[in-house]
Image 1 (cartoon, helix red, strand yellow):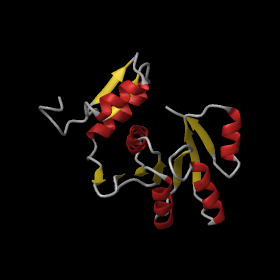
Image 2 (tube, rainbow, N blue to C red):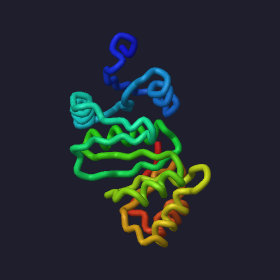
Image 3 (cartoon, rainbow, N blue to C red):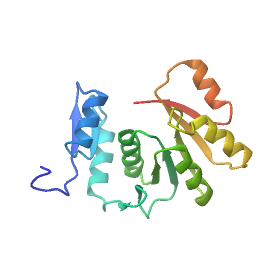
Image 4 (cartoon, rainbow, N blue to C red):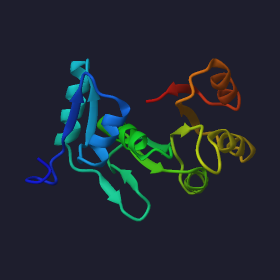
Length: 173
């Protein structure tokens, strides 16, 4: 499909897929989205709506993806490009504008210059961690809602991460 129609939006679906398969499909095979089975009809409707919508504008210099007609703007901070792209596409299918950054330094810069409605923040990143970003936001009195995205599933980490003010803790993938 990608050879004959490079601009086509494709959805990779699997009932036996793993995170690694999704990553391979999106990075090397060019899939636009990954959907794990079983899924709800509403998931398919959202993806079809997204695929039929006007293509998102990509800022090649920074990697930011935005849709200008969205009402709320969400910052996605994750060093895993597959996770951030999947989350971004999912949010865009609901009409949100998204900006993606891949480390703590980029996140702090983006937060300084843009008023986001919410931030989805990975905890474990090279350099500046998600927890350090939240502590910096408290010190700077930046009152944006933060939601943690993490592969760490223990309760103590979730409690520790939400103490500085995170509104929620989501387990990935």
